[in-house]
Image 1 (tube, one colour):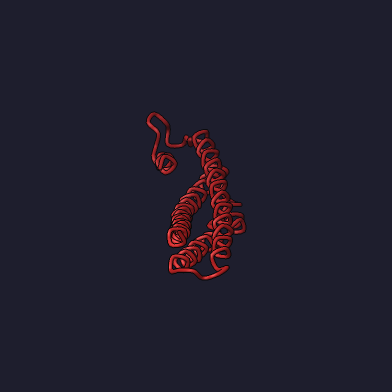
Image 2 (cartoon, rainbow, N blue to C red):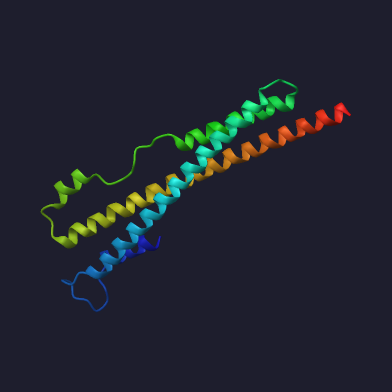
Length: 170
């Protein structure tokens, strides 16, 4: 939100500045901050991909162990929950079309513009890209959390199955 407020201030005159003056330094600082945040979001997205891969692997292991021999309904519940968790992990891992700016379009549109307008346009596009990526990362994080909760429930049902089998065996 701070970035959007900073962008808004670039569209409105700065008190005490002449109409011809352009806040070049502010634009450069804003550009650097947007680039930093894009990098930060990219790192977070890669972390989510790693966690999703771990989720899929863990659910596969649990489901494989559970299907070694049917014993009870708890085991069936555990396998179903494991499969559901794996699906959530796979949804997070699925390839997406990026919201990144189109470089060819940038060159065509900005080659003739003055440097300030070009940088302003790039910053504006990067802010739009950042907002889109952030929203997708939040959705990915929510799906990943749901997958891990399902995996936890699968483990709980496995422990309950083992406990009931142990109690029944005694």
